[in-house]
Amino acid sequence: MQKEMQREMQKEMQKKIRQKAAVFGYVRVSSTDQNEDRQLVAMQEKGVCPSDIYMDKQSGRDFERTQYSRMVQKMKKGDLLYILSIDRLGRNYEEILKQWRILTKEIGVDICVIDMPLLDTRNGKDLMGTFIADLVLQILSFVAQSERENIKKRQEQGIAAAKAKGVRFGRPEVEVPEEFPLIVGEWERKKITIDEALTKSGMSQATFYRRLKEYRRMQRRVV
Image (cartoon, rainbow, N blue to C red; front, top):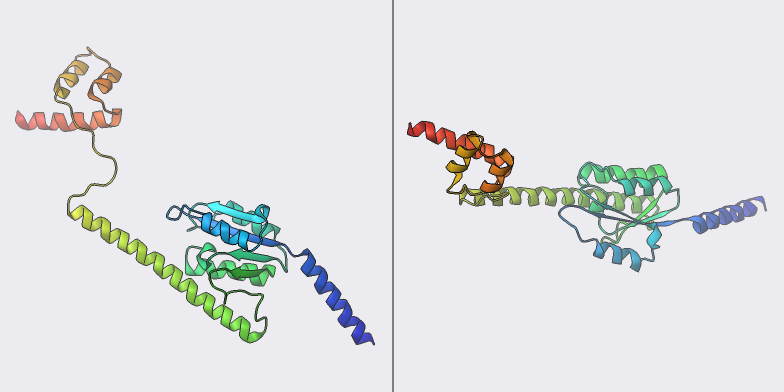
């Protein structure tokens, strides 16, 4: 009789925990992924309330994310977090594993990775289920970091190849006007101010002085 009452009390407590459990969604977009629409649609399809979707629009390399921190502070044991893909938790292998451990082990939150159904901590709460989820997590985290490193490497190789072909990056250089020597002469004789010299030459002050230095160097060579 006593054991039966204890079981009923445990069921009632679990029911109350489930009733109070909150459902969160986390969205992150970085400088290389500016469109959050796909992630937001996925959250809505899972029934996440818009007020419970937290979004950061910045690079996650150092994981200094205001909205993510706010969300974690509100979480409690039994809550559920939806993310579209595993790399939304961090930008490298170590960070993904760290955040997963904080959420699932320290806080006791369930996580569902929408793009990877195997990574749903609500399923397989036994030892085997936990082992499979942890194994898949480590593999996917490693793959995510490797892909980012490969993308960066390909970008660097592409830039190096373009530079070798003479392609210039950054702002185009301002051409020196033909009357630049006359402008410099007027400015040196104090016939015009530096602001007037900049306007006439169509340059910023930094560019003007750099071109002036190059011009004087050329003059010395001629002499």
